[in-house]
Image (tube, rainbow over all chains, first blue to last red; front, side):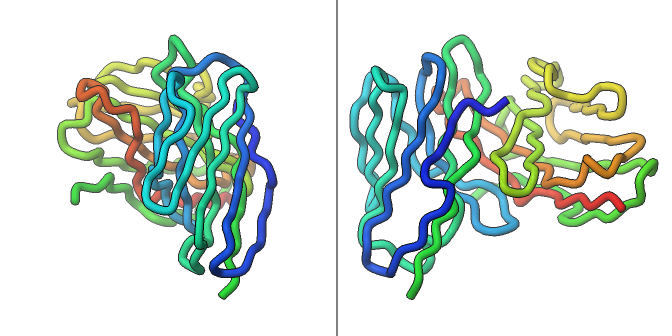
Length: 111
Length: 115
């Protein structure tokens, strides 16, 4: 079963705008990761935030984590057409070495 | 940059036939994962290996699916017999947990279509 739930399921924006995707999960975690998947391809790791961190930045990406609410958000600033992809959150539940993925948010950035 | 290799990239088969997928992880990665991803969903773990040993195969339909990693390097996932519901993307990933890093590196996947 899938632990994470991304919101929204689909998001369409114009180039240059910011995109925000949210993720909720159910159990205690060691860390939360975000991955990107271009259509028909494998997943690419974007960023990892540990359970004792609240915010993390990587280039145009900003991730927040609220363990009290069991939620995370991914912000992509100044979006580009090349950012068009599906974005998945994945949790690393405590006591487990596996990742549990959500259903993803499909982002379309229109030029 | 090292990558996870998978083959074939695409496979079309008829139901009741046998299919096999191959994965070669990044060199030195002891942990290997096979995921199944149904269209519009996130990946779901089928089996996890640590070296040549199975760590977790709780979600692997063992009546028809099998996986092996005999020498602790490359791995094969087999389905016999294939069913219509097996149509999906099969993804392989690897990681080097001994380095303390948790991110997984994914291959390009094998798209299976069962007719």
